[in-house]
Image (cartoon, rainbow, N blue to C red; front, side, top):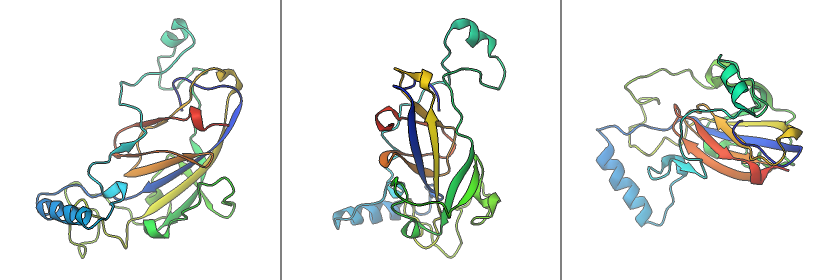
Length: 222
């Protein structure tokens, strides 16, 4: 979390729903996919955001150059290393509560509610790759589709049986000296798509696993 920050001491619950697999558009199935999606809409259906080529973000901040806020010019010039030494930055790295699901249909749909009990969930380090923490299958591909060959490729549609979802939850407190500032949360990279809730309210959605995403949390904090 960084950039400008908010009113006074605020406690917040952050919730992330990460869809693990978004299929890249390949030459072989694109015409089929266009016809399939068109027919789906004509039949009155609604594609989920992660299968809809027209949706790459919801309520997400516009992209911009990387920067950090400092209280004055002197402190900004002095902070030349990789570590960040500004009072207007708070890292959320650490252990988060975590639940892995085989596909979106099996995910805990109400986990973002503040009353939802996650005490029996496992914990996972953030950042990390959940495949290397014992969940799902590690996959590395640089030219092929990252799912089992028995599923034909029809981008942007995704196999419904195996499309893993990770649900993350943590709590944080905004420092009291951020009074009068807006609070933004910054994700350096989430693969492949995710929703974010804060204090039970949906904040937004983003996809694009190798690109940063930011959201303004100010209206959602308590």
